[in-house]
Length: 106
Image 1 (cartoon, rainbow, N blue to C red):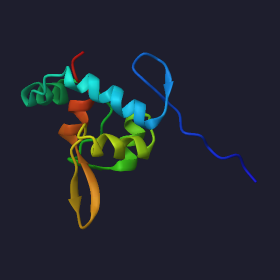
Image 2: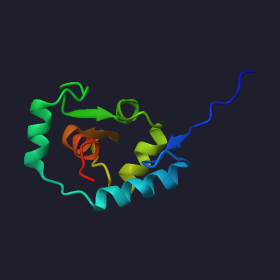
Image 3: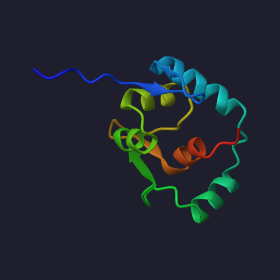
């Protein structure tokens, strides 16, 4: 039998935390952010941020992009840090929401 994979998140201060604490830390950071869609459009055009050119992403794709677990992404969605769209019952995350989360101001 193999070892069970343990999910670890590192917060913005470099501390190892559980998923709930990570989501809270993200919420604090987002509260300080000015969500300006015009800035997101400019970032999307000018930046090589590594996000494929499509409008909607699966939860697993978003988790891979941020380097976190799918559970963390679902917590971010649950806490309102990422938007979601449901298509035939399947959750998708819009591109603008991912970029807003990725490039928020301190």
